[in-house]
Length: 357
Ligand code: COI
Image (tube, rainbow, N blue to C red; front, side, top):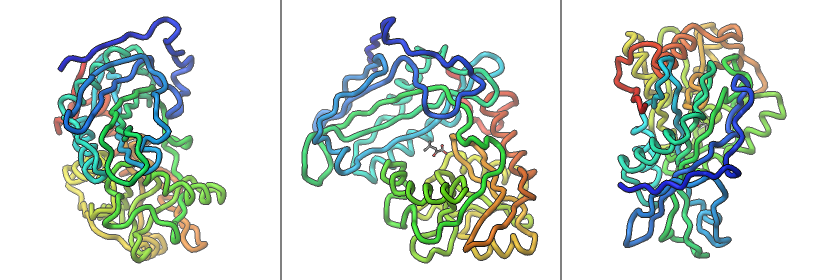
């Protein structure tokens, strides 16, 4: 594939963060972005890397009206040996294509999108942060660009990738978060778009999260849409519980985002010889376990935060402290294991990590 590269001029270069140890998440982008266009009857073309900047968009572009958008989130890690590593990147592009199919959008060729991404990272490699807990976040995105005011799949799309250095996603970092069990609003229903990574799911989640924040919680714990009975996800992450000696997470039944960290955690937990169940878990079972002392840990998993331990669960006005309000032993061990593999601090027995330079 021929990718045309237009380098950013001096005044198009962006300011690098002064203090890498205090990056936060999602505010800084690099000098360049990758783009390609899709048109019905023609497919993908115009592969290019350009200076980062605004994209012209028609006010009637269909993404703005009917939400045809899918995205991904993955990271490049600055390894201790100076290399730059990706963690299971093809899984993100496979998921992007599954999301695209659900939204009636074109699929990308995985190799082609990955080539563009790697070339972009290499061009902006000086932006890969090296401080503890930092990485380069990668955001592949696809939007419907055709200007048309009727509801049907668009006939033209833009795919782009933007990247930027990030630190911790939650200001709490690895400190346990307080979560509110949401028993009115829902994130997704089976048959809906919950398993696709699409903007509408996140828009739908905002109100519940804002209300929870007002009450002093970091995030909400989502229950299933049909009965408000089974645990689904936490905030924008998949959710795991350790009850007695069983690790559980919700099954991929159509309303759950198939997280890549989720999948990695399942694999590692099994590898460690622990009991790992993908099964529906009733919130009543979680609360009963919290009350009788068998709920040992609860944590969210995602690319952005990796493992986010839960220190308190509040349901129907009652607070339940989990793992003494601290990060549990399993959460800590999983975090250490995944991060060590990602930064290539230890061998990668799973073949998950790819060195790009
Ligand atoms: C994740 O990586 O856990 C996320 O889903 C966060 C992202 C939407 C910013």
